[in-house]
Amino acid sequence: MQNKTTCPFCSPYADDIIAKNTLCYARWDRFPVSKGHLLIMPFRHTPDYFTLTAEEKSALVELIDECRTIIDANFKPDGYNIGYNIGSAAGQTVLHCHCHFIPRYRGDSDNPKGGVRRVVAGRHYKDPIQISQL
Image (cartoon, rainbow, N blue to C red; front, side, top):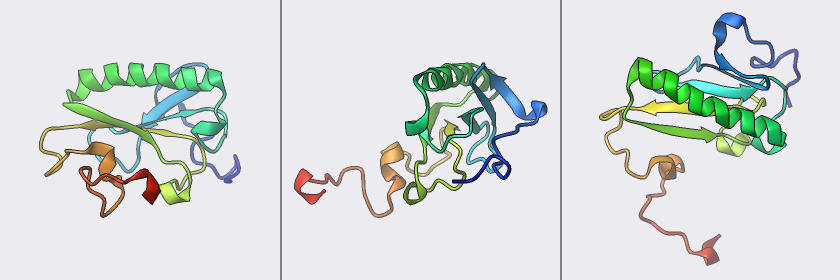
C-alpha cells in the first residue's frame, strides 16, 4: 500500500477541495473522463471501500449527494456513473480509497447501454454468465 508521504490524496490543498465534511472530501479528477468528473475520498489514508469505517461510508454518501447538487447546477449532465476501483485487477492505481463520480451526457458514448456492465472487455451486457461458469 502507498504510504501517506507518497499518496496524492492524503494532503489535499484547500483550493483543490470542492466539497467536504468532517471525514471526507471531493476534488476534481486530474484525468477526467467527462466534464465534472470528481473523486470523493476519506481524509484518512485507507486502501479501499471495504476498509472504511461505518462513519466514513456514511460521510462519503453524504458527499455524493452534495456533489450531485454542485454538478447539476454547473454542468447539467443527463446521468451519472458512480463507482470504486478496488484492487489492481479492477484498475485501482492509487491505494487510497476514492469514489469516481462521473457525470454522463447524451452522446458522450456511442452506446452507453449496459453502463458499468461493459467495463469487462469482451462481455456484453446481454450475455448472461451462468452460476456454474463462475
